[in-house]
Length: 270
Image 1 (cartoon, rainbow, N blue to C red):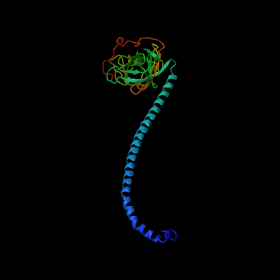
Image 2 (image 1 turned 135 degrees about the vertical axis):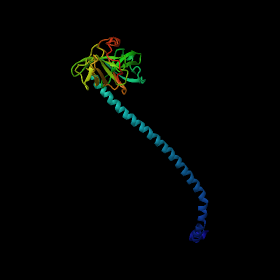
Image 3 (image 1 turned 180 degrees about the vertical axis):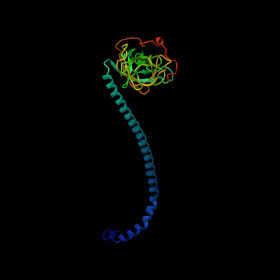
Image 4 (image 1 turned 90 degrees about the vertical axis):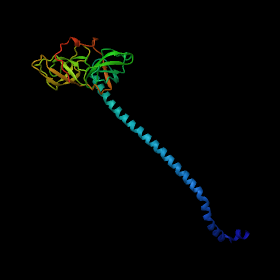
């Protein structure tokens, strides 16, 4: 041992022995390496699966947020149009949101908005959007109100032809996106494409606000009045934000009671 320490006589022998023992070291270490590799692989797989699940969940949330951003962008555009609409109305206005819509066909055409008496709303307030007149508030609760749409069969709205000032009354038909004009003589100066605006008679609706476009005129020599159908300008079935306009004069809901109007024809308005 002393000679080996000072002269390194046994280095060759130790090298040979080390070479002979090395396979044994590897053989002994193989189970340990297998266990370690298996554990690492399983851990990596579980980690990758968890990370993949997290990323997939995050991707879903991001897509939902992007859809919400698109919805907010659309809502912002609608609110901008509403603000421009409110600039055209001199009366007191409230910005409201539609909570629910009566979707039953051929029934009362009504919507519920999120403004009530606590917010200053009251029966008689006009309901308008960025395109035109939608209806009128008929009932008000503390926190919400019910509005009757202009297409409801119980609604009557004084209008005039924007081109020549010819006055009439736009009656609801109970059918989506359809109005009809009352008492239009066969020789009246109207034509398809004419724009109807509120006349302001009765003081409930602001004058000069768009109501609809004349889409159909039928003149029958055997009848005293022409049949005139109108498509509303407002987006009655697609709006979410609306304006409530305070009436200039507090009057009953109907300017002209429908039961007192002569019936010029009884056929289906559609």
